[in-house]
Structure formats: structure tokens, C-alpha cells
Length: 137
Image (tube, rainbow, N blue to C red):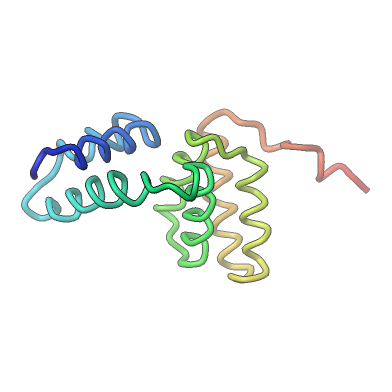
């Protein structure tokens, strides 16, 4: 892989969102099988697109989470739930993305999104009683 400014910015963004495991942990385990994918993700996804003006990191995280719900990408939902929390998206905001997805993606996709979110919140020690909504009449 070519290490240049775009790559360095992308690696920093990955580290901010996913920690060392999602940054150095990914690129240090690059093989001939996945080197092009890792280079593309680091350089163009996180080093270029995520750096554009127009949307904040939190907004990009919300949009990404919604698109992954729509596609039913359970592994990536978990990865990007962690990244969204790191980018300042609140658990309530992520829940609302899931609730909104019921309308446009369907119940099974929303269930998968909620399952992924619940797993990550529990992993992070975040209580699932977010705002008392379940207790309201």
C-alpha cells in the first residue's frame, strides 16, 4: 500500500471511529487477498469521502447506519454503531434511525438493526433504558 497524506488521514479517521483494532489492526493484517480492499477503504472511504464538507461525522454515521439497515448488513451495522457512538451520535438517535427504518426498510431490517444496536450498547455498558419511553402509558 502507498502511504501518503490521504492514507494517513484515512487511518486517523478509522482510529478515531473504531479504535486501534479498526485501524492498525486491520491494515497490519493485510494480505495479498485483501490489500486492495483495505487500501480503498482507508484511502478513499475514510481519507476522502468521510472528510468532505457538507455533512458532519455524526451525520455521516447516521446516514451510514441507515443504509446498512436497508441492506441488512449485520456485521457492518455493529462496526458502524461503534463508530457512530465515537462520532457523537447518541444511543437515542441510533434507536430513532432504527425506528424510522421500519417505514422504509421493513420490520425484518429494523429488527436486525435493533439487534446490532442492542449488542453494541450492552458491549459498551450503556443502559438500554434510554429515555423512559417504554414506561410511558
